Amino acid sequence: MTLPRDVAVAVVGGGIVGLCTALELAREGTEVLVLDDSARLGGTTANAGSLHVQMQSRFIRMYPEQVPGLEASLPLYTAAARRWAELEAELGTSFELKASGGLMVAETADSYEFLARKCEREKRLGLQVEMFGRAELARIAPYLGEAVVGAEFCAEEGKLNPLLANQAVRRALATLGSTILPETRVEQLAPDPRGGWALLTESGELRAGRVVLAAGAGTGALLAPLGLQVPTVAEPLHMNVTEATAPLIGHLVQHAERMITLKQLSAGQVVIGGGWPARLHGPRQHPTVESASLIGNLRLASHIVPRLSRLRLIRSWAGVNTTVDGRCVLGEVPGRPGLFTAVPGDAGYTLGPLVGRLAAGAVLGRRDLDFDIAPFSPGRFAGAPALA
Image 1 (cartoon, helix red, strand yellow):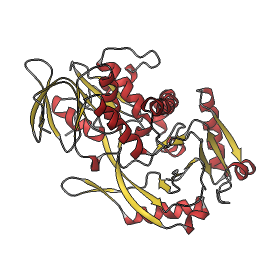
Image 2 (tube, one colour):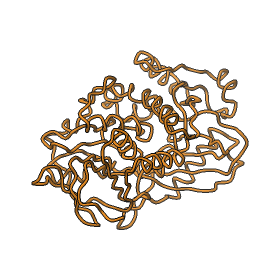
Image 3 (cartoon, helix red, strand yellow):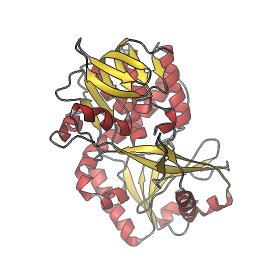
């Protein structure tokens, strides 16, 4: 499709946040165009489909200074899990969404006690969490190996099939007459003398009355020439999927100390992720699998769930996660009328539809009654040097 010369709202980024932002705007009758750099680089199309709610124990230990921000963000995650269920119902199609709960497992008494303290804090903040010892786990999760001594259970966690969800949102956008332009990289943003914003792309230039930057790790680079610092960082991560097997893993499984997530799809395949590193390779910085991560990821998965060692690996891939400071970057950019950011915090796919709703509300000038997005403003980075 030919690049249009003028559009009411341009959404930069065709991941789940950008798609949901565009969907919310289109439902309100707003003309919206989605510009997507490249689906193969995005975190959405490489996502494993985990719906995270509870705080990551390992992350808390590594970055204790970010705990206040994580705790302040917890209501977003519970609301985000609910929003996924609402979106599935609204679109009238199955995402294979299952809110079957999540287990964060511990292998030592020290790790279990750390989870117990985290559990108490999360209860006070409104999460549906509880601690299970070995006896309870043997009853509800008999697939876990003997190395696991206990776990924190979060009832609000779950899983879905991201390929089905992404397709459903794209179909809904098409039905509403919105356009998604793939392989269209936005190189530069600049205020347009006529008002609004000029976007320079590989295919030419267009003008947008308003712009939403939902470009994940690429958001900071687009803001830097404007003298704005938003420290988005691309984090390439590794994932595996096994052949299909009989129902085995009924929960989203994570580890309190080590990098692992496990979930079983409706078709029987087990998706294994959890943050093992990949690398960015070549001039396009394509996320690329590292053999050490492949082996380490599978070894740890088999340690936690021994029956996985009997299954064959059918695919490995890498994707890009975006990190900032543990919190969303959301709202209008101070001093730049008509320019908005929509970058989710940790567990970005989980937050996608909710952040899309909040970003669309900001564009339309609506105040969300449930969430004050002011603490997530990109203005909180003011005074820091712009990214090079």
